[in-house]
Image (cartoon, helix red, strand yellow):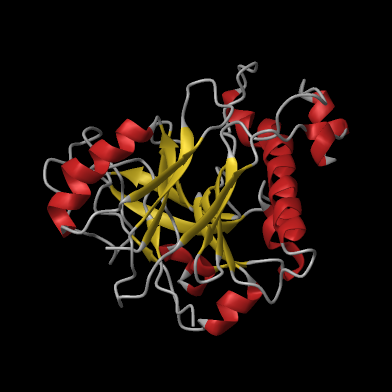
Length: 299
């Protein structure tokens, strides 16, 4: 079991306590005594959160130092308001983060930034097929603000510090298109995208997407489908490491846990896994997203 868990779409502290007692504790025994939710701006009341053990698997103390939410940022105060945001109806005084972006400092001088970026569903637009394009300015603004938060925290000296940005970016730089169906068989093709809403976080070497150490066909964390004519697998969930932390861990490749995927999700050849008990065709399921885990040496 991991030492630190970053979660998205968390309703409240009670939900975290139920998750730990009803699931994690019964699987692993040792509990995650520190549960740190971060209140955000999402109209449905879902936020990000972090859970940590008291010590690592190797017996080193995990000392929680501080929590800082950044839910208060507006486009104007973050300096990210632009013409593209105005064109889709956003206003300067509106909050940048729909949910929240927060940073948690750990006792061994590592900072974790938990992020959940905006969905590709545009609430005021019926053109659902253009959702990624229409909502791109919002995610770009969120990513620019996250980058500013990291740069401010380390006074511009980010490359040689130890930090991670973890979360659901709700966007992708590549996808695996899926053709066919369960009866006739599937075919898969890897496709690169021109841009993504989190580009400011990975451009010019600012951070390293650790999943890029995996083969391109093995990076996906979500299956998207609107019927057999529109299907793809893509990576929405990321662990982005500082250049220094990535360099200290050159062989650290993430594991993408797909055992909780519903049976309707097609798996490229060689990736099939044993589903968790009681997983259904669409529901119940662990989530439509796959958790991403990595083991890092912090010494």
